[in-house]
Image (cartoon, rainbow, N blue to C red; front, side, top):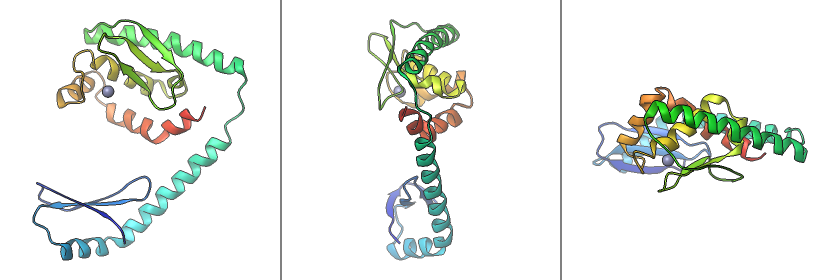
Length: 185
Ligand SMILES: [Zn+2]
């Protein structure tokens, strides 16, 4: 079985199966190859089961993509306009709660990003956020507004996000798992 082996200053061994089925083994620094091999062999059944589940998920997502109903140009325009209105509203609301300001808000047609915050404080958002649950849209808004305080993804940055949205991790995970379906619009 193929796997990636990452050694670090930790005490225990752990296994992770990525969405693409890749296996990652994390071990303490002083851990020999034989022990890692044995560890992976012992967990082999579990790994295979998770890999199969991942594969199934990918297949289901592909099917969902193919089944998206066709949209007309009016459909796109309607959703883009709506996205602009909602994002303006949510940004104003959360900025006040967080005690930050911002410059201009642009709603864009991007295929890779959900949002960004420029050094000048202008915010860009992807209009497809309107297709996500509102909790997820809010998460992206709060994320970008938190960059008004911290222009990085440090612990301090995530603490700012968490102070407003204690469950931000599950919102973020939703975007990771379903984002590509939204992007296929
Ligand atoms: Zn960020």
